[in-house]
Length: 508
Image 1 (tube, rainbow, N blue to C red):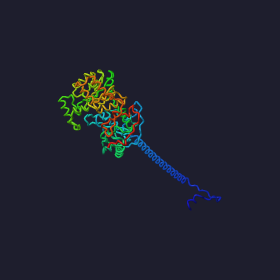
Image 2: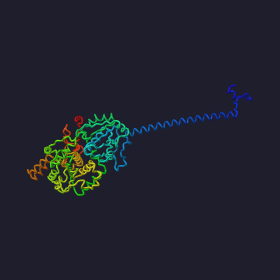
Image 3: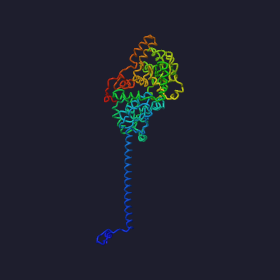
Image 4: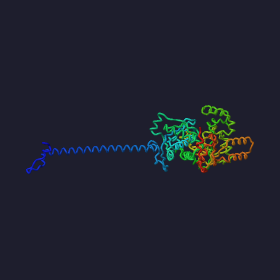
């Protein structure tokens, strides 16, 4: 008889009813059923737990991926070393977020003001190529032998933060790119006086291909003219607003200005009559035979000074020599500059020392320098750093009532432009050829003092830093006016928008 039939029995009435199990059998099967049910429940819960764990891990991975992508789009914030907003007591501009095309590293070359202009150009190039700029490296190899780096001269935190609405600037490459350039770095000097077409068509593809590109030089790598107004205005913003001096330099420079202003108005004389300048130029007016020999030896000692044989007399008559202290004294007197005004000499050691300064000091007895205004201990931290010392003079020159450069070097040009930007502050731009001609006539007795003075004033009537159009000489950028000397697109007198002839003026 089958198992199913065994469970039923016939009653006395002939009916069939279920035959009960014995107690022992019943308990056995009940226990088995409960165990099976409990096992199924446990397995189900394990499966649900595993599923929840998998979902949690998947969501976590997606969140991490999203955060990583967001950080990358914001410019590798974690590795950027940028200054947190909380360190500034003033509001920062909103950060510009853009798709990063790569990284630009630059090595600035030249003296302080040559590097300053180059840095402004490199920030501008980085902005319009939509790349990330690494804080520029400064020149430690040229004649000045100054090992200062960017943060030693400029306020690097302010530089990065104040330009965040234009371009992403990092103190160093992110780790991944740093590892890459350790193996191979694409370096090149960009072509001098180039316009934006060159950077769009030549440089940008190289950055996109190599991810990181290094510029070996920055001097005069952007054209003076033929650029869009927004490009020119950004160059100005970097130069006159973002490039603040490092706090120690700024504080000491401000102290020098306070000392001077407490005694009245002051004139800054950029007297380029240091030994290196005289040796380089080959100009030896007023030097004795021993000094001429010393200067000649110095010129031949530096192979990168290409011009060796120089006719000092002819060069001076052509207006190509720095004015001597004696010529400068006569010129300032001819302009009628107050005998009692403070004259601050923004320069290094004057060649010939007090012997050559005697005439100037007799004409202007309130002749001072930072070395005479400050205790030696305050200058000691800067003394062996020529670019930091030059930064002190730059600030004082910009703040002065009158600025007079005696040679057309980089500081003279950049300070002139800065003073124009601040409202066309008086800058006497000496016509050295006219000065030399008039000085020679006066010293020879050919003209009277009154004639000498009136002729000098007339020759410089339109050379006082007043508004003027920048001289443009197509194809000859070295001969035309330097952009940073007269950044007219950024000045109050600039009303008409300048059209770019970018497509017509690309350097070869």
